[in-house]
Image (cartoon, rainbow, N blue to C red; front, side):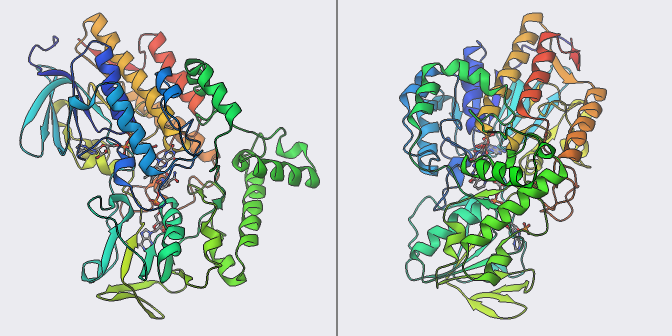
Length: 535
Ligand code: FAD
Ligand code: NAP
């Protein structure tokens, strides 16, 4: 195979969120030609679509941002430690404009297929309008949480009131919830952010909870000036330092002691210190031990119980069925407090499941609740949803649906055997949501573009991971998942359990961002021993 002269453009980047914007910039900087394609009318990705009231990041904004350009770090002034959706979207627009990549993007355009042609070593990427573009590399920056899970409840279409999805919130109008009877289904991170906002204005709020989640306070508030100065002084060094941390956060607190080094009083002290310092998940150096995790889980449950005045409601709101970390913990300073309001009521679907949605409300096994609006905060077809919505065909006609029929497989979270020169940032079997995903996106795009440049330098036509590398990576991901509390035993989107019929595969690498980065760097430094080169 020789390098193709057939391509219209060297690289196509699909998606214009954190990963896609940086990919466009980095590829162009590398001297390759590039085109972006985005389904939305603007940049932002997650931060374009999820514009529901209360949406905001729950890690510090000065971490949840780009570091590749010191000017951006110094110029952008976040108004809060945990910025709101609108601000993050403006930030991403600002970055895209500053890098001059907006004009490279075809907006309002969905990619429907991508087919590889072995002879020319090119991908043909086809768009919803039937147009196609031929390229040598594809970066599928399509997001892990970009395909909403369709509400799987009988009667959804019968409801005559307002039906809204947090993950595709209307952009064309402000919705006035004053005086309305609002029902919210779902109590994951999206639900717990929107519920307090509804409680501020609605006549009544019914919260339909199937599974309770851990809820811990946020770091919201004014940004710590010392931290800010430290970050702004030398952003490039911070960028490198972030890659040596477990979760891509700087600086991240961690308990001073191991669990068994402490007696009961010492453990309580460590838990209180971690709670105050906002790092409860790492209250002990070995917080992954089941006994350490049990202490953390109990501690958070106790804190939650203290907030809600009605003991029955408090008990229902606390997750007794899974350990801390089994599902993604939620962060809010107002969610639990909301249940102390007289017009907010918890409906526990464990005891009284929804029977169906009716034209004027929701019928449970016990009652009919009349509503003017239903908000579905029911989550995503995470990670594989966006991939499967594109007809991807690689070497010898193999499809991604076949390759991932038993769950996702890849090497280092980014490339799949049989699909040369196609890269998936923010995807399966990467540190994903267990890291700061902005930092991860930057690291992965660096790795991906450095891989392309290596191919270009050597005049190679392509690269794909060895099959054995994929098996080994899958085993490594599984090994870490085994020691991650609740990973294999909790029903969560992390392992596909939120969608009936989805293969149960734990989709996140829990070894830590630092180890992940080291593995990528080792491939780069040793000329890609885990991959096969196509010449
Ligand atoms: P996305 O931002 O999801 O962008 C993917 C883009 O690809 C989308 O714009 C989509 O329209 C486009 N696309 C998909 N398929 C196609 C197609 N076929 N054709 C054309 N375009 C397509 N992570 C954190 O680390 N910290 C947080 O605090 C945090 N908060 C979050 C809050 C919410 C409400 C949600 C949903 C997620 C949050 N996340 C958070 C995770 C978040 O998804 C990532 O941090 C990050 O924004 C992902 O960036 P991305 O570029 O990989 O993907
Ligand atoms: P989610 O965590 O998957 O939560 C979905 C909720 O809907 C769950 O409570 C689920 O219950 C419930 N649900 C789903 N189908 C249902 C049904 N048919 N009947 C009743 N209840 C149903 O989704 P999410 O809240 O959108 O969050 C997804 C991820 O996005 C998060 O884990 C996080 O990574 C990210 N996010 C982050 C933030 C942030 O603050 N930074 C905000 C929003 C989202 P079960 O648990 O029983 O399935």
